[in-house]
Image 1 (cartoon, protein in one colour):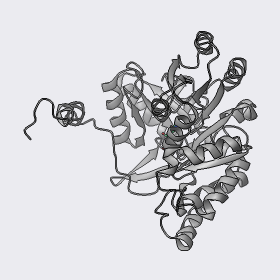
Image 2: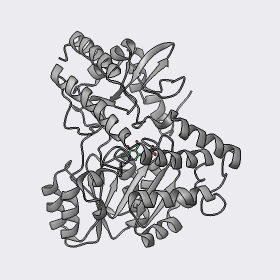
Image 3: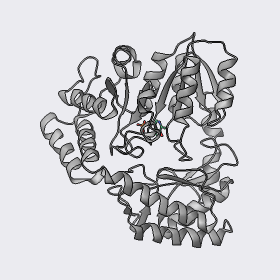
Amino acid sequence: MDLSPNDVFRKCFDFERLEKVQNAGLYPYFVPLGGHVGAEMEINGHSIIMLGSNNYLGLTDHRKVMEAAKAAVDKYGTGCTGSRFLNGTLDLHIELEEKLADFLGKEMAITFSTGFQANLGVISTIVGRNDIIYLDRLDHASIIDGARMSYARVLKYRHNDLDHLRYMLENNGRSSGVIVTDGVFSMEGDLADIPGLVEVSGEYGVRLMVDDAHGIGTMGARGRGTAEHFGCHDDVDIIIGTFSKSFACVGGFAAGPARVMEYIKHTARTMIFSASLPPAAVATVIAALDVLGEEPELITRCHTAAERARQGLASMGFNVGNSETPIVPIIIGDETQTLVFWKLLFQKGVFTNPVVSPAVASGGEMLRTSYMASHTDDMIDRALEIFEKCGKEMGII
Ligand SMILES: Cc1ncc(COP(=O)(O)O)c(C=O)c1O
């Protein structure tokens, strides 16, 4: 294609990173999975232990959950073909929102079509030009984009560094503002200091929002998330989350004071100008919530699997960071080594997620591993054997 120097397509043709990785035979993305995302599955005809999924409770193929999805298609059809605001609200959406509010102990919950849209919609309606938004440097991309959309002043504090946050609050007078943090940090698997953030937000009169995409369903005795884990659930103003992880589906939500939720519901552009969640998705999440209530041992099982892996990996000499959650990083610190290690593990039967810059800072390249309630001890032990063999082969341990 003939391109002038100022053609907007120029960047696509100058994008060399992709070919470089492909030509080296190390391309790890968009791997097609041919079946249920279970704890062990077939990929390209060979069996692989899945340590790269967010299906923490293993509910994507739970009988009750699957049946609920099928029944919803029979009753409501495949889609709503409209936004919640005008023509895309089913009685099922209302039922889910009531259940969620009850589960989370908040006055009201509202659902969005993805967790990403929940963050964009909530943040960009709640903060505006005259406000300040305080973000942890490792917050998820959707929080950062929501902050950009809001036109508010954005200040990022060092990861989990509350002294740095205090310094920023101190130096910005008592302007109206909000702190937004991940509950469980999605790559590193460590926890935000929610009790500390509650204290700081109270001290400086700013609001606190927690995006607990990876904490809902995995943290706290009832799976209500990171704030429940720390015993300060009632002190978080707004909880945001996704259905694309523990709840085995797709979609997002926010929960908090009714008046605030009503405002977001009637003003957030990602709610008003985007089609609602399809019936099968809504029914899936309702059933997943029921299963979580009936089988809270799934939470423990997921942590037991992660702990077995974490201890095994650490004892072999891998750097597993500071995780206390079902996400266990293996920090490598070099992009090529990370991709080679990923490929070796994949070929030997373990699926992990390679995380390189810009998803993590240069020098923090890692394999992200994550664990499910459906991982057995035997699966974890077989995966550990493969980690040890490949890690030694590459001189990582
Ligand atoms: C912390 C966090 N927030 C939000 C999202 C977005 O969720 P969704 O997949 O529902 O768009 C993710 C998903 O990766 C996430 O990890």
